[in-house]
Image 1: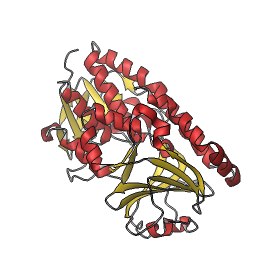
Image 2: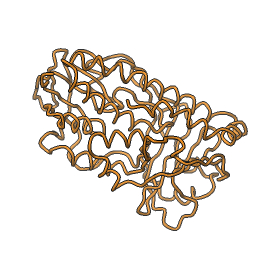
Image 3: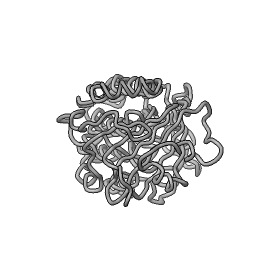
Amino acid sequence: MSNPRTLIVGAGISGLALAKSLLDRGLQVEVAERRADDGQALGAGLYLPANAVRALRSIGVGDEVAKRAEPVARQRLQDHRGRLLADFEVGSIWGEVGPCLAITRSDLHEVLRGAVDNDVVRYGTAVTSVDDDGTVTFADGDTGKYDLVVGADGVNSAVRRSLFGGPAPRFLGQLCWRFIADDAGIPGITDWTARLGSKGRTFLTVQLGGGRVYCYADINSPVAAAPAGDWRTLFADFGGPVSRLLEQGEDAYFAALQESENTVWTRPGAVLVGDAAHAFSPSMAQGGAMALEDAVVLAGTLADAPDVTAALTSFQARRAGRVAWVVAQNHRRDKARNLPTPLRNLTLRRAGERLFKANHAPLHAQP
């Protein structure tokens, strides 16, 4: 196809991965990022399931990511006191797709930044509006006209608001906290371990290597605001290493979890990727994976299709069913998590590994 002038709005995981993929295909691209170039990425850690690792390999950064990441060999489910509910090898879930890894968000962001030339990304450059004809207005008053505008600017996407309309992402009824802790001298931390309490409470730990562990905690909530007081008291009854890890969680990153209701991510001259298109529950740990797959698929369709319109039509068709599957599995897993505790525990003891396999089976195929 001709070489469309493309603007990617947002220099997060999906934006930088897409920029790398387009540049590798000889396509012209610019990236606008509203935040200043402070080299810091929001968030704490990431669990990268095998389909995410596969996508990173396909854009040429897999080896560098693997150098910085920690392999995850097993997944364990426990009750809040640490009693085992399920324990299985990650390889039994993903088979030949490949390994699963854990990495800090800042390390992954640094790898992707390093893979894109500095002059491609304009930091401190917010987009205020996008017109139907591809004219983009920036916060500093500058304008530019593009053949394709890609909204990779997160759950509160300015591109989505300007061009797509529709309902804003809805609150999922869950609050979460994320932080990275030092796990030196704290027993009971290994690989990926989710500890399930009552009332939808979860405390997840994922080893990052180098004496670090990624901690993720969430609760059900009727309101999208942090509860009064110290959030860590909500997990005071959790056993094992949780209490010692919580000592390091005073400055945890807080978020009210949201889910997109939009299911159409393309329109003439514009497309949404990553959380801008499909924010959802982290239950399947597929947020980053779907964002990376978006980048791989969109770059491929832009390179192969005769024009932008055909490329976007192909992108929507290839992504819709796969993302819908992840959303449905998230809902099933969140529903199961909120079963009466005895029933939930019995279900996971009897069928935990089998359920995980079923959740992920369709994601073995290439996106």
